[in-house]
Length: 546
View (tube, rainbow, N blue to C red):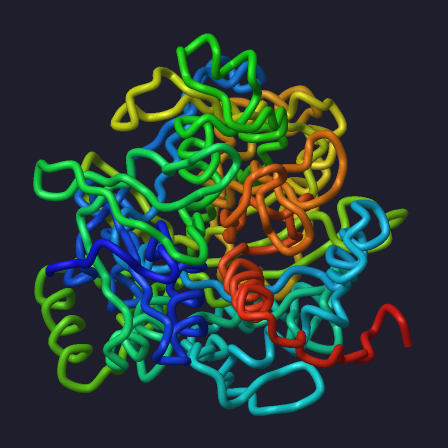
């Protein structure tokens, strides 16, 4: 695709945030917009198939294939960190769970981080605006937005057992974790529509491209933000082996995510001055918070043999796999329409907490990876995520070469209380699965196994097995303090005509999956960029404040 030398807005990254921005900024056709995406178009066959996410996120052709440095508290293990390098970004390869996080997360942004305009009341109208939920329009839900959101409906008795176990264990039940009661065991929502993945690209970018004022350039990796004095005037990028530059008449907007956005800022001379000088980079703004404050949800998986066999357990048989694929292609029905993790929960690791700090993702199948092959086992699995880590990591430069991956360390469990919370979450998961509701299904515990019982054994298992739940965030945090990178309108401090709009601007990580809040942030940012009034706040009622 050809491109011009001048645009009003240049958006770096066609991921969850970039697609929303392009759509909303491009509603006025007088705005000429260029979207630069380092990866290819989202034509990979596995992307639209909900159950194909396991193939998609492991595909090196559509993945940045990041990995952490040695994690000190995980016995110096490297933790793989897949991120989408494809149109739609990580919304094209994720597990599709649609979770806003707890309302109190956003209220804490307001009270603890000084972001007076970021309470949940102020964010809720933007969640609703973007949402096309099969639950219908109500106080908490939107029913006419771009993003298809459907409640998990895959018929499997294990999901029913999970809900009943929530009641039996006292961990609770919620009809809708994004609604009135954001706590307990529930059927989860997914970004799915008519049996297909509803990525940010499908929901927002494709309709925007049809207007004719937006140019999408794929396989275009931005090398540097072009800065004169303290003002941004464009970017330089590599495309088809050649270096090009384009000008942005109004703004450059970074939407590369929590790893790529701080990386590009630092390469361009915006970041911790001492670190940049070490790599011979000219400094345009000394912002010590760039790449710092890195947060993520650590995760461990428990897996149990299942005494009863269900159709999903047999899908890897060649004839069943073929039949499943054919059914999806022609009807958009069957097992392939499921993202697998259709149930889960938000619970407290301790009753003293104001709101949940542990998340479950429950799947009615066991999954085994052998190199590039994926096998489904007659088992069921529960992921246990720690939602509000105290530990902080960082993204730093390996070199001044834009094509060299940055260094990243999350420092999982550096704060010992994080490990204690995860131990409690692990015990809660075992307690949940031990309830009578699972008696007819629960076989032997496969992972970690019944031999892991003592506190020390559980801690050992967690350090051995903990991985990411793929939610890096907070590396270009909003705020006004010394370590803040952008202000409450996501403008980079000290630099004109430059914003960061993605999960990196969160000052604190949200207690849930990050795709939904990232799209909400982008929708709010678009109105800010255009100088529009923010949507009127909605003060909804919740179980915790009734």
